[in-house]
Length: 295
Length: 323
Image (cartoon, rainbow over all chains, first blue to last red):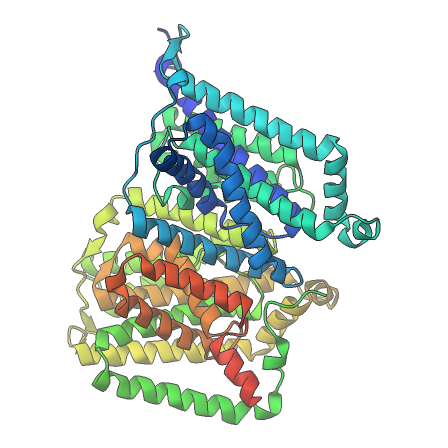
């Protein structure tokens, strides 16, 4: 054990780790928001509720079908992603020609409906979800104790973020997607089914949120309001990063998680607000966001 | 061409302007004068405060096209400052309200100055985030009383003469202030300043090219809206003799958006109707617990999909008048 700036290394690295964990969720969620915004020009306010639904899906799969964490990691994002596809088909596709603020209002309303329904059934208190057996325990790294599950969350979210970046920036399908973001009419003229791509993109973004929810379930309790406060922080992350770049969303998410963790060590009173303060500073210095393209 | 946030056809009927608005205003005043004889006065006072809150919000979304998702910031902090100055410093109600409202104005300058640096959808996210930041400040600050809020705020004597502890005096006071605020907003949107705001809503680039400093116009509109939202929050804290975290939570920002959307974005009377309906719903459905949240969310969805003009907007369209 040693000290850095008068802080025991255990505390410092412990909070840094927690920051990285939070950062993983910020990155996954802001990535989903950025992907959805790119295709649909909608800020998906339901994103927090969909993250919560992912966590609940993991919980319910275990309770009622006996499916463990590893199965939930695959099944939950698909199931919630499908509900996302339904939402796009039922509601969002009708808003395509309208001012984007209607998309915000509609998805906000959906978030209220979903959160309200879950609160009716499960109340407001959290439900516990066990860390999977293979990832229980942890190892002592000398300067800190690293729980296995937390290490897994960071590695998995980095892998998912990178895979998403690769799929969008480096594959043929991704190039269609980027082209359709720039000019949907022209891409349609090349014989690509853009409306279907839009629907699937929304489903994919929602699936990412649900995946984050499954990963969060063993760390935080599963509760109906777990998404609503998180989504506001993620909005601030998105404002800071700007939604123009996939990599920007990932980097900003992780970086802000770390900053938040460090704030918890050095000035705990500000840890809830530090991301919003950074947002205000970025707006003053670089109104378009760190990775933004225009407003 | 994208459909605008509101349908200009509702607004552009100048020849019918006077009589339809006059009749509607008379009906509204009559309703609130007769109201306390039929309905619970505290409920009506709450509806009046939220009507002013929604009208202030509508000034921004309806006439400048900016959607703020953080108006609880101004409502809540004005409410805290009024409650604190009335209770701890023992200030008279008019001074306490002035302090609360001034606080909202200052916060409006800061939040508006930051938020108008980005447009559209970002504007909504920034206002929401700033409001959440100030929510955490309220949660941690000593003077706000944390989870308990500031309770037992004395209503005091207005100008040292009229005791507001009397329910009837309080009602008249609230009604007069809210109507004054309502008329002020009407005056603002029909002034040359208001015309520039509408021009910004329709086409900001063109307004800039006509030589208007649109940033400044947007900031002034934002501050006016924040100030009036603060006035509403100050009044509300005196009505309930309480300032609490509920007033500043993001759900409060959502409520005011819902009121305005339901009543009709960009209509003169829509926010009043919407506020009354939403408050009534929250009151009478409170026993159903979380279903209120579900119903409110469902109203959002239905409004956006089926009637974007809102109740008053649809009536105005049907009767081909301005309301």
